[in-house]
Image 1 (tube, rainbow, N blue to C red):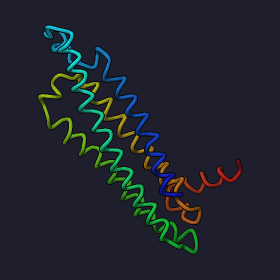
Image 2 (cartoon, helix red, strand yellow):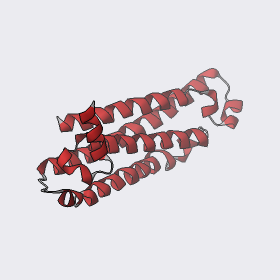
Image 3 (cartoon, one colour):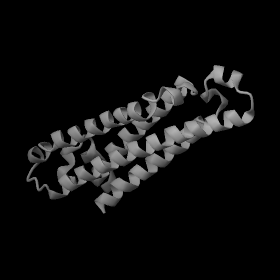
Length: 174
């Protein structure tokens, strides 16, 4: 059940980010202004929108898949751990933080690899759109990883994930 919780939280955030990117990349301001002025037909602009979506949506999908995998690794670590007290549970905070940092840095690496290392594709797009899409993906992955691990962690390991103990207490009251 804990694995499913982490997975569902990631799917929820991925769908929100993917929908946001889809909407952002369909606006006229999402293309480079000089390209729009020189485009001879509306078909060229439509193809540029499709190219942008074809670049940004796979980026977000790959970013969320790697975050899901790292969250599930944490859930696996958390299910095997049997801490006796909060101090022993807190010893697992380093593993959680390492996976968290790995998730964020990997998203930035994927952004560079899939978007900024391809200057011809990125040249048609407005840099603001690219930055906004990458920023939304980083924020989405960060929230999905945090909430996915916080809700999937057993209460005995609540001190390993910052704020998880508070979320567990709030969950028991309702």
